[in-house]
Length: 331
Image (cartoon, rainbow, N blue to C red):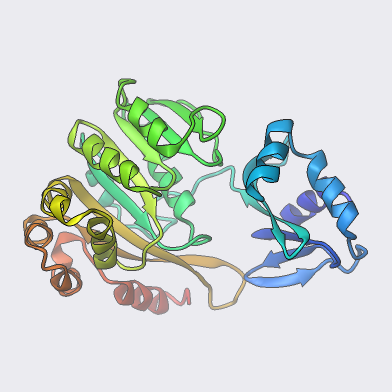
């Protein structure tokens, strides 16, 4: 077995993921279905371990030894970049690779409203892209950065783990920092970005309380902050942020969030009707005077009703998005 050959084959077969496990044939995930590569033999544990170690540098090997799991990028020159995740199941080593698209989709291709282009022109504020892993959050965030770079003269700093899409400077200047290589943590990367004349900051994931604090502060101080969260539903996202803080901080955080939030996108990738592609379904909350008051007064239970009612303010529910996709015969 040769990992590079399998990665190249995955591109030819339009696979979304490559799964390598000890004591199994290599597998590709194509249109959501796992397909074993029958032309390859079953991989032994030692063979897979040797192959995986061969594509890692010394620092990555040490990190895997210490933490037992690792994310890192692979650049297959002239073909594509891949995001790799190496981990252990029982005593066996596994690896999952995901191809990273070289061409980012437009807002229209993502089925996002063109009017959102007006909102990303804001000088400061917080944009959140939410849901689970493999829901296309990184593609949406990267499309936002690419759109800003193509249309505005900004200094953009990203803090990622690992770096996936490699951006080219356009009208904007883009600096990409990888946790563990260019900065010690998301918290550190965000803290120092505020001292580096930044205009736009992209945070791969807000994982801890201090990163949340810094993100809210950055969104108040002339930075457009784009970040992801693992939450389902716009209202639940607001609750999740507030609930992370202690009781004596909640009122202040609600005030900060009500002022700095621009919008929240909750998204998921669904199989198309012919099962050959995946399409993005989304829910959109746009912060207006009414939503801001709901956050400040802590009547979050009213937000779902507001999204459904205030369609004129560009908001829509996940159900509305699904209905639109059904009407367009996408799903």
